[in-house]
Amino acid sequence: MKVFGKNFVLSKNKGFLILFVLNFFLFIADIFTTLLNKNILHLVELNPVYRVTQSFLPIILLNLVVFLVVWVAYFKYGAVYRFFWIGLLVMIVFLRLTAINNALSWNGVEFTEEKLVEMEKTFTPEYKQEALVYYGKVYYSPFFFCLLVFFFWCLDNKGFRKDQILLSKNFEVKK
Image 1 (tube, rainbow, N blue to C red):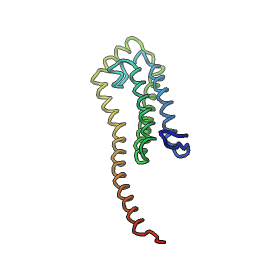
Image 2: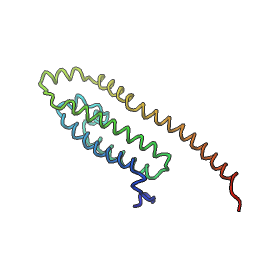
Image 3: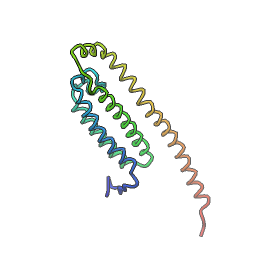
Image 4: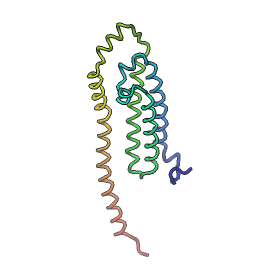
């Protein structure tokens, strides 16, 4: 099968496909588990897109665009960039698992009027902002660490390839 003019080999792209499919199913699970708590959603949802729009439709559309970009970029660009796209998918898997876990932790909690008033006092906009910054640091710092590793790996790989080319030219077997 051809994808963007290149042969698509399942055995060659197994890791990417597993992560891509896993991300898609976790995306659906994330939406459903979040909607289980729609009576407190306005209090506990940290997603900045939701906080601005108060709707899940932009989040769903944004996720579909991200899926499309990752799919196209993975197959369009060279092997070097596959490290980046696979790293991004791994990070998104962990973010989604955390979001699902958080949503499920609210499941079964009985929300009386007093409890909702108490939650409104606790989950202030400042608190939500602090939580968003905290989760951003926790989940995005490993991603930036991987980008730094990737950058130095690229530098090293370019030097290694140049050395290989020079060595192969110097040691060509003459017939």
